[in-house]
Image (cartoon, rainbow, N blue to C red; front, side, top):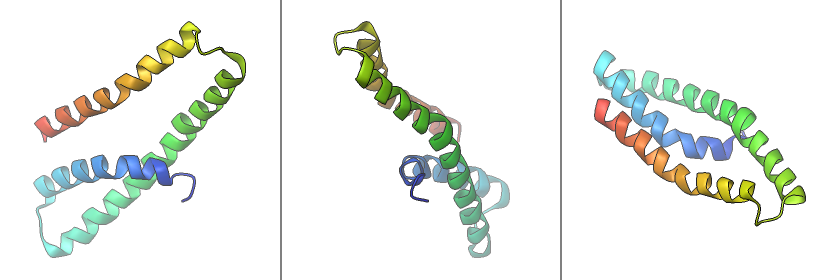
Length: 103
């Protein structure tokens, strides 16, 4: 849990929102179905967080360590990386709005 805790923190709200919207629309909302929805959400959060830790977070950390050792801060690689890092929150916001629109 310690390794994926940051990924879980980042993913839980979006996954919870999507699972809740889909589950309520298909199976309804009652107190006995709440536990089923919660377990589905929990499994998805852990699964997606484990995936994002292994295939996104760890490779990104290795790349960052390599770039810090080898590349000067005035290089085009660093400038492009900073642009992507600055654009990431906006892209996540757009994804959230699209999901919100359809659900």
